[in-house]
Length: 274
Image 1: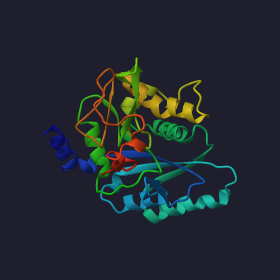
Image 2: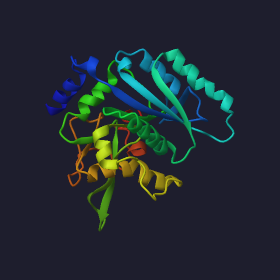
Image 3: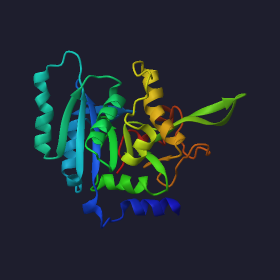
């Protein structure tokens, strides 16, 4: 019953929608094509900046959104070819600012760049961070669905499409979980939470963001852990009736290896599902 109530709320009409505002920090790597596909267990899923912006331009609610597009520069790419990003933005007619940066800390570094731009502009509202591997969006007012989910329970600090955790094992038995996190291809939050949890940077001073495992630990996992440590909860669109706060029993079927091992959950991989 709770499941259906929250689903209904997420899909319900919002009479205050014209007053809502969002910011998206949309990141990509310069070597990626604007139009590409990812293979998820034999299924080809369209993704990239091109499909995302073109889909969004056709949906109701896009006028309420400003996008900070952050491109991580790549060695050997001709700067003259960067005009393709501006041409894409012009074709879609969306409110997009395009920035190029040195590829330090990959997606998480680009998220931090966009977060700092939001701080500089004194932006105070809801903000989403996403990379170009996400498929969608597919429905009108899709960001409002995430807003409703984000505020469906008090003190939720971070919302996504899917979550993950690592089991804690003792004497061969699972006794709990650790490294609980929102998967970083799509992170939805608000500036009040982020300022309380991170101050002026999403990056941790002195942390390693060069090696892949360290980037995951300090980036994707580290962001969620900081939010949880500040007393906020996390939730996701895949199971909107559930949420997790530090110290609780993990209520989700998502766990280490689910993307490969759990066919039932694979439908949730890397899609906005709204």
